[in-house]
Length: 246
Length: 234
Image (tube, rainbow over all chains, first blue to last red; front, side):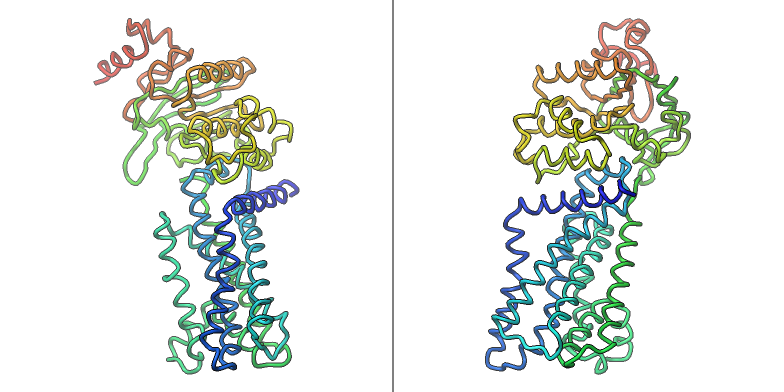
């Protein structure tokens, strides 16, 4: 048990070290969502209320997309460079590696979410009726969701080109029908049903609820719970897709 | 005792058969040169022994079927492309793998010394030369002091002086009772091995001592012996 905890933390540390030597990636990771938020505020600068209506949901979407991409490409690199095979020939458990990834990228995602949320609220004037900490909780959950789905998606791609293509294939549908553009109730019945099977729908719903409710309502926690279940399921599936032998 | 025993070992990769029923015996404490042209199945055989390649037939390593969980701590493997992280330093690589392998901290330092990378320890692996990267990968394999070391072309492209030193270390490891399997597509590397395993097209041409091979084929070196053996088998 002690060994697996050590191996997991060592893996997380190794991934953080890898990324920390790549200053440009770090800068992009932390600055891009903030700049996009600023751009959005500018777009809606003549209509004050609009920004506050759209921005919270986007706070959940940005870390989701970016973490999905970074995770799936880094994991794929590990698969193709032979280092994963080397790890698989040692006593390390598959879950040690997947959890190490989740911890390392989760940490980056949390920092990213804090920066973006703080900038959106204090610099760009995003206004939510409900408690701000809940916005933050959902953003962090979305980060982990992106990491978990990225880990899973990397199992199905053989090249970096494929990994990047999984973004539109895997992520865009969730954004399109997740309730960001059109409320679920106004969509065709079948689409609404599909939307309820996808994790991002619940994250967007939670963020919409916190913008319109002054207090925490039970549906918000239900949403967070569902996203949590998707994260756990994706991480378990991702562990299963790692093969000791090929 | 035999470190490795293969009986009718088959390997198929996407419907193509790579190894066609090999019978191989490797004694514990021997140094075996796995020699053959590229495409002969050397890497596939090594991957099977290490436990990352699915196979058919029997392959026992240290008395256990290859790929058995208990073997993971007893075998060190250096793949052909140095499987180390290029975007962290030499020392960071070694420290990470030491934790994962469960090797004592002190061994990390010894491993760096053995491959003579002390002066490069804080350099990113991406800034090293090909030969230096190969040595980082070799250092990782030395961690945990495994009983069997499987080295896929470990000396390709190395400076002859360094190559000599590495072969010296390989011999030291054998004297300490370790079993080493070292592949090469360069025939004259076989002249450094007491035992040779010649492979061609997924079949074994020879699996015995080098001296017997030379006597058997009346050849002056392994290269000519290889050609003679190919002639016999076709």
